[in-house]
Length: 503
Image 1 (cartoon, helix red, strand yellow):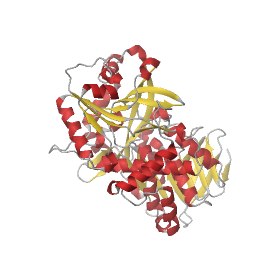
Image 2 (cartoon, one colour):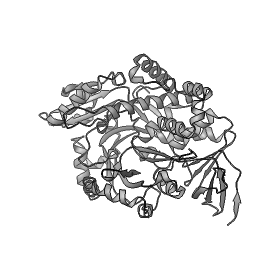
Image 3 (cartoon, rainbow, N blue to C red):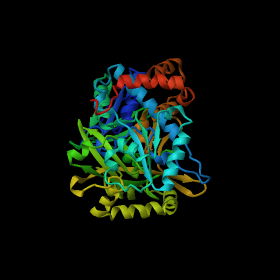
Image 4 (tube, rainbow, N blue to C red):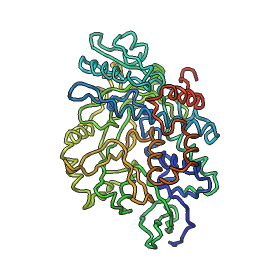
C-alpha cells in the first residue's frame, strides 16, 4: 500500500447521497471556482437512504403524514411541525425548479411527479381527530385546497382499492390534497451528481472510505483525512478547509472520529424497514395516491403505515409498509458491529437513558421483528380489506439511525428528526437523523451554510444569488399567500408536475 498526499480541495463531502448533492450544487452555484472532492464507500451514488427502494418517496410536505400533527392533551392539534415542513418542501421545489430552468437537470419527470396525498383513518375517535386536524390546517394558506370527507362514496372515488370489501358500518374519514408529489430521491441525487461531475474542480471518488479525520496540527484550521481506495487498498492523506459529513447512518462514526466537543453525547439507534410490494398489475392500476394512516403506539415515524403509488425506474409500483425491524447495522451495506462500536464514554449515559424512556419503542420493534407472513397480511388488510398474499412480496427497505442526544431532564432522549452539528469555527458539519430528511434537504443545507459560511451568506452577492435560486428565500410563505401562489405556479411549471394518469 502506498501513502500519497492528494492536492487540496476547498471542500470535502463525505457520502454521495441527497444531502451532499444538494450542498455541492449550492456551493458550486455560489462559488463557481470552489474545488470539491466527494467520497463514497459504495460504487454508485444514492445507494443507501436516498435510493427509491430505501425511503418513503413522498415529497414530505405534511399534507398526509399524521405524525407531524399530534393531538395535545387538551384535545387541540399541534400544527407547528406540519407548517414548518410544508414550507420547507416548497423551498425544495423552488430549488429543483431553478436547477431545471438553468439546465442543471434536464428531465424532471424522472424524479418528480404529481400524485394526491391522502390521510385515511377509521374508528370514531380517529375520525374526530382527522376532522380537527383538517380544521386546524385550514388556517394556513399552504394547506389551502385540502378536502375532508366522511362520505363513503366520496372516499371511494379518491381511493377505490382501499374501499373494496370494507365494512359499511365502519366509521371512516379521509383528507385529500391533490397537489402532492412522488419524488424519486435516488434519481434526483444522481442527476445532481451527473452535473457536478462535469464541472471543473469537482472530483467524485466512488469506492473510497474515509478512515479518519482530525485537525491538521499545523495551526491553520485545516483538517487532515486518511482515505482508503477500497479497490486497490491504497491509502492516502488529504487536507481541506471544510468537511461535510452526509453519510446517513455512517455519519455518527465519522463524527466520533472528528472528536469535536460539539459532538459529545450524541448516539444513534438503528431502525430497519421492509415493504410489501405488489406484483399484480391489475391491483396496481386500481390505486393512484399516497395514503397515510396513523402509526401504532410506540412506532417510530418511519413506520407510519401507507399504501403508496410510486414511480421507480420508470415503472409504476404499489408498496405497503414499512414494517419496522431492528438491526445493529447503521447502513444497509454496513456492519453488525456499527451499533456496539458507536458506544463511547461520552454517549453511553444518554443512550441508556433514551433506552429507558423508550421502552414502548423497544416493545414495538420486538413485535415487528417477530411478525409472521399472516401478521403482515393482517396489517395490510386494515388498509386493503380484500388483499391476497399471493399479490405481494416482501422487500427490504432502508436502514435509519435515529438521533440520541443529551437531555437535562431525562439524561438522554431519542429524536426522530434531523440534527445538524457543526464545529465552533464552522469548518466541519455533520448531519444525523432521518425523517423528513430528503424532502427538506434544501432548507437543511441553507441552515448549514448560514452556520458554516456566515460572512458569505450575509454578503450582498450570496443574498442575491440565493434569492435567484429560491425566490421566497428569507420570507414566510404562510404569511404571504400571493408569494406562495407565485412560487408554487412557477415550480409546478418548471417541474412539469402532472398526474400519472395524464402522463
